[in-house]
Length: 249
View 1 (tube, rainbow, N blue to C red):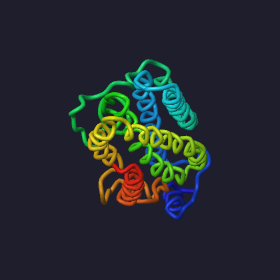
View 2: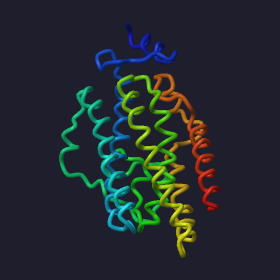
View 3: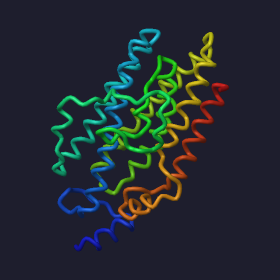
């Protein structure tokens, strides 16, 4: 097959199953997608690790520790797929400032920042337990939408990894919602939660990317995207609004 014929195959819903028959442009976009996921999971894990000691009870400490562990595990699973493509995974064995954050009042939009490929939302710092729980809910619901999209990628081994990861990531959001329900019932909890929501909601929204994205069109032709940024953002917005309505936030 020529590269053009493979891309035509992908544009019509075809799947690839091994690195050997992957065109160069496809490989580049797939590696970028995987690196963004791995780096985001590691940054999320590192950031949330610092919140474990802010947890108010044993159950919440266990939940936080589980999230930290499982996000690192998810990163490792996708990293194995990257290794199949000959990616230099040694940099993940060294020390990297995954917990590094910008100033709280910074506004970096959707831009990449620093020396890794994490989503921009993972450059912002958490401030205490309530803030960590709210961020976990808002971003956790976004991850649920984004993983449903990623589970359809045209590189089949990676799609299978994302499908395996999705239920655990969904549980992270559920744990956050349970924690938030307790917070809003506590003294001062509702006001603190609403302040955190106002902070995190636009920052998570930025992670869905620009409307009418030319990049989306390129990825769609390669079978690496299937729904537009606008559609994913709308689904997340509806899911978040429904959760907040249940909590009267």
